[in-house]
Structure formats: structure tokens, C-alpha cells
Image (cartoon, rainbow, N blue to C red; front, side, top):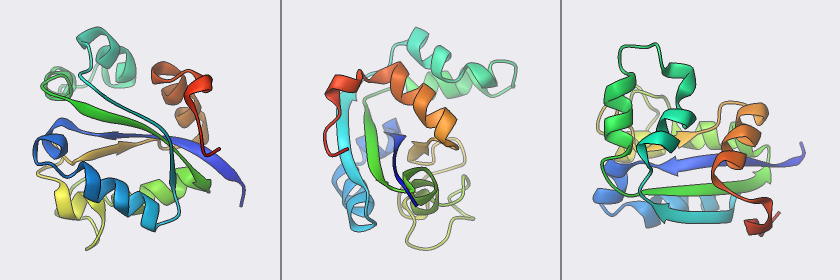
Length: 141
């Protein structure tokens, strides 16, 4: 399996609960490296662009409101099979259905406030990384 990059967001509910360190430690303990990271508050415009694929869904407004409600940690993660590894580490979207020890099982509050986002494919990772990072910002590639 090749080294690749993926995108992750530690969402406002997890940042508010001061779980950034534990979440990053989980990534690192599972072989992922932080290639870039930023603590920021998403603008409504950037958030709507990021979640554009969900624009017609009934939860879109609530999702954008939540994701712009406080600081988030944006990260580029690198490692062997980073996209799939990150998906495994995060756990199921619904924290109640996530395997014990996964990030969402430990830190998620609900389906909507599930602590983290991770790219669902290498193509999504490339698009999402380009939306928030310049390639010159990446280390640990």
C-alpha cells in the first residue's frame, strides 16, 4: 500500500471539549502523521463550498451552522493507505454505532456532531486538501 494524504477536520464539539490532543494522538498511534494543521473558524462561504454536495439535503443549513459555530482543527494526514486508515480510526458516522476505541465512539455526541470528518476517497482527499491548504504547507510527506 502506498503513502498517501488525506484530509481531516476535528469539529467544533470536539475542539470545545479539549479533545484535540487525544484525537491527534490516536492518529499518530495508528501510523498517520500530521503533514499540516490549522486551528481556524470556517467562514460560512468556505463551509458551504466544502459541503456543496449536501446543498440539497434537509440537514445542510444545520450542518453549516454547526461547522461555523466555533473553531475547528483542519489537518492533512499522511501515511500508508491514509484515507482508509483514517476512516477506520474515526469509526461509524453515528457514534452509537462506532466501534469501541474509535474517535467517534470516544468523542462524538451525535450523528451530526460526531467529532471528526475524514475524506471518503483519494479523490475527495485531493479536493478537500486543495480547498484548505497550499501544497507548500505540507511536511512529513
